[in-house]
Image (cartoon, rainbow, N blue to C red):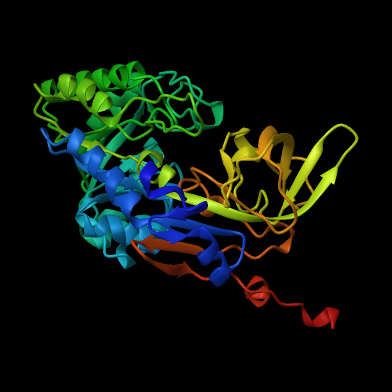
Length: 420
């Protein structure tokens, strides 16, 4: 929340800890999260839906740090996972397996087996062949796997094409026109228990109409299933609600979102499942970086920093905007610069043609709204160690992931004997 990140006494602080103090302990680049912001943003979201008490499942792909997941587990939240690794992370963080939904188009047999044995709530099934594999694995285990079909409602959420997931051409889900027949087949399978319907139309969505249109289609399908003797318990509408990355962006408030959803589902017998990710954690984290050089190009001034696209890929991948500020509050004149990293790619940038107070070598910058799809999408490109993650709680901070050492980057690699 905005008041957990602000200038006090000329220094940018996360809760009651100065960023400079954290950097002195862990160096740069580093991710910093506010525990208060994590809890506060969740409270706002939960309160918006309190009238109907849905199952809220945090989308682990947004931020899978164990301390972040434990924060949510302690709040009684559920989790949406898309891999065996994410499932294991949730379990290690103390998440309730009975509140886990498992999504994703390419679940392996080992992942399916682990999820069934853990006792997850249900799978979001993405294809007929996947349904058959889940049935086979469940029968081998002598169990029934609870499933919802992820249907593709062919709805344009008006967001970036890379994060639009409910269009007809998308790889996700089963065509809604074919869903009834697939449900009938699933209901006859020995290892399957049909419990729900799922859809997820995209991410960073600012309009409410696509959510309403999708939910109406799911309710209509649920009612059609009931007429065929197939009764479902859950309607899972996924996540996707956007956040503000820059001044002037006005995403719907969670209460506005909740109000339109409640109007549609209140008169139905279905329990609502939600999979928020970015809206809970996006504005609860920052990436801090240090200025290495200020370089005057032929037509552009460059501020070269020690963070790079391998640490935060969103600007390079999506051309996404992140606000960048100086850690020491500056009231001086701004200049127009490109803020770039050291990786050998033209796409390695955080901001282009951006106004920034004049900075010099050694100054600290904070890249805001980096709590979602930040560290989780990082890599070791250019053989760069991944950065540490820090959690702040009041006047204290805790290193919740150590910086990788160079030796960590070689673990598991060997040179064959014939080369020696």
